[in-house]
Length: 394
Image (cartoon, rainbow, N blue to C red; front, top):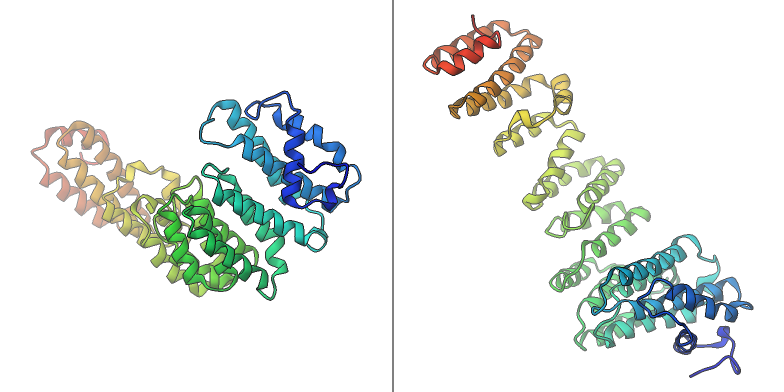
């Protein structure tokens, strides 16, 4: 093992840095699956950071985090405290990327950053039970620090070569997603989609897909983002917590920049799996497509009484006539139930209809309708009683 007698951390390769951290960790009293392990290891290695620059310190701390994750994240230890310890380590690493990035680190520590990416890649590919979060950290490392250095694509093409070789070794998901990113930065989106589709067969989580969308939004690549949103209108959307809302938010961002993209948005939303239908409904309301919203509810056979009055107020204000067939369909469905509770509900809808006809100044049409309705259902004694209670017939 490399010791500090002959080297300082700034002079160590990442592999030797990991050896140094592991040597320090052997002095820890806690086990990797106890809450205090991270704190104890960080305390032991801290003296080695006293003479490091901010860039070197950042890199050292990232490697400490990688070491801790490797010790804490295995499939055999899924207890509460192990999960808590892993979660705290991940939070620390996320804070490093988003709150503590030294501005000169990419330039001053380029070689060590590349070594760190290589260390993550090799660990993930060579170890059967590598920490799942290594993929996220690897991607963030490339997004935040390495891809901006690859203006001539040399670094990306070199990494592409390493990943392609690694892919043949059998570990599927990590190289597939990593390769998709390299293709993305090379502008080869169709190949990136193919790789992500292959990764989905090996348990790709939607968060990996949405990271691409997030970066395109951040960089203002609106046309490209629209193309990805259309292509991604598949089973990946809506699977992860919040992913459906996030997908819709990206469409909002695109249509703000390119209003002509709205029609393509509707096609994409309509093509989503059935469990994503709530987003389609939400967008129809958001964009003021009242009649389409009503037509959609009619096709689903939705019950108007399942919606709060305030939910339907925008339609009542902007397109009250569109609500007429929705309420009429609900009335007829409740009458067909041949139960008093159904009759009571039909009367509620009939009262809403009466107000709508009055608002539309079609009182005569309403009188003709309610008279015909009562006559047509004259044999339903319970319904007649509910109509009278509701003041709809004498």
